[in-house]
Amino acid sequence: MQVFQPHTCSLKPWDAAAFSQCIKGRRLIFIGDSTTRQQFQSLGCLLGTAVASEHAGPEWNASSFTGGKEYMMPGNFGRPVTKSFWGDVQLRSGASLHARIIGSYSGDLLDDLLAELSPIEPSDMIIVNFGAWYPAFAWQGDSLVDSHLLDRFQRDMTDMLRRLRTHPAQILWRSYSPSHFGGEQGSFILDKKDQGREQQDKMECTASEEGETWYDDFIKSYLRHFCSNVLHTWNTVLFNSICA
Image (cartoon, rainbow, N blue to C red):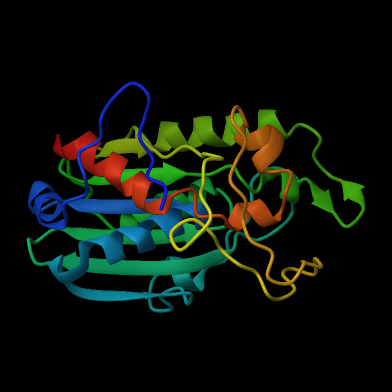
């Protein structure tokens, strides 16, 4: 087993009871793409017996306003936003976790999601993350529909932060990382065709190279998107960040 340890600081080991008490009475709201979903699911597993109840699944809550409305991606992509996962977890400490996972950013959907979760309180924490799918969305078949990926990403994220700043919650940006390990906590194995792309059966994630950057190397491999980015370590970092 390999254990991640930063070069410049020490991380306290994960402690489910301490984390649950640390966020007592607070809401952690995860809004982002499928890598954010992975972190939310990892956190639910790590909390174990601290969880009082949970409801999660790929089906968006059809009774919600956002569940019954179609949202379009910004710009000239011309595609609806994929609403891929909905999760709510209640902890015994009174804290709660909420995940609203979408395949791409939409300002209108963000506003409606936060309205559904209102009132947004100063004690709430919103963890956001987008970006990994921008290269894929640039193409429609063999046609390049948007060659200015970085500009598009910057515009969308600027718009997202402008909208979030109108709310009193604490905002955390969850970055991407190419650092992931093989094995039980660090790989996702594909054994089927995905989105029409031929994948090698049972291909496993490989460890990143030293100096590898997520955009230049990580995102070039479609398969590497499914690597878990050392999910439990993301939550250990979260624990150290807000409960130190």
